[in-house]
Every structure is written in structure tokens, then in C-alpha cells.
Length: 197
Ligand SMILES: [Zn+2]
Picture 1 (cartoon, helix red, strand yellow):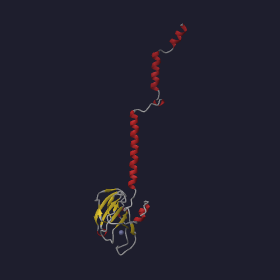
Picture 2 (cartoon, helix red, strand yellow):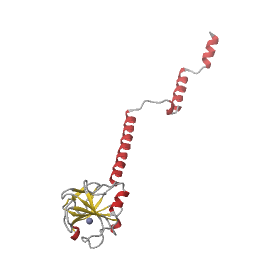
Picture 3 (cartoon, protein in one colour):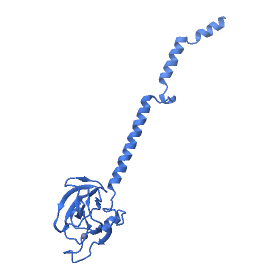
Picture 4 (tube, helix red, strand yellow):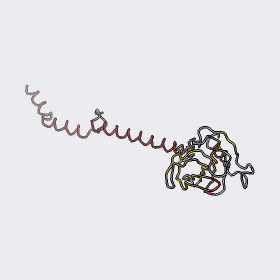
């Protein structure tokens, strides 16, 4: 038994071994031992996921709003840009969408209404200015359903087709004026945005 006793005395005591075990645990990196997620972890994952979904939805909405929409749902093009007629003092400065009186007119782009009211030969006219400064003129309207200062989205109804001003029948006369200056061909502009008028 004496041999046993001497061997045992050379070994660390229980208290010493316990101390060493605890300090080893404390030193061990947390990643060594995968722990099941806590309720707080799960809450954090869920919040991060929701944030990602919200950001993605906001971006889709942004893209949706930057897309152009056709101004009238059902129509027939009757007057092209650059045509001449006894009706116009110069060449035709827009594109004519013939449609029955009362058919909704939609804003082609997201923008701000800068004018909404009577405009001589143009009849009842709404001007929407897009963020890049391009003006969209919607003329000969029967009714106008927006006011100057209103923000509109692409595809939003801004009024109805009519025959106010200098016209022979109900239609939307559309003008597109980059920077509010000289008009460009709306048909080309719409085609460039993937819309075939
Ligand atoms: Zn016209």
C-alpha cells in the first residue's frame, strides 16, 4: 500500500483538478462547442430576415415606380408627331390617342403635377414633371382629377379623355418635353421604354 500512497500523493488533489478543469473550460473558444440558438438569437435572426425582405420589397417598389405606363388603356393613334394638318398652326407637336370621352388617362411616369387647368387650344391640360425634369402634357381632357403640387405614380389616373380646346373629336394629345423645352416624338420615347403605343 505504501507504493500506492506515494503515487497518489504525486497526483494533484481533487480541488486542484477541478480548478484546472474550470480554467480549461473558460479558455476554450466559444466556437469549439456549438450551442443551440437562444431565444434572443432566434429573435435576432428573424429581425435580420424581416429587414432583408423589407429592403427587397422597397427596391421592387422603386423599380415599379420608375417604369413607364401607357396613358390610355384602349385607343387608336390618329395623329403622329411631326405631321401637318390644317388643324395645327405648325407641325403636330405630340401624339394623339383617340378614345371615347370619359376613358381614364394615366400618368406615364412618377412625378409631380405642375399645372392642371385650361390652356387655350390645348383645352383642359395636366402637366406632370418627372424627376429628371421631363414634362408630360396631357391635353383636351374632359375631367382633371389632380391638382398642381400633387405627386403621382406611373399608371395613376389623372383625368379622363375629352374634346376640350382645339379638336375635332375626343382624344388625348400627349406631348413629352425633356427639361420642359422642345417636344420630342412620344412614340419613340414610349418605344425606348419598352412600350408600343
Ligand atoms: Zn394632337
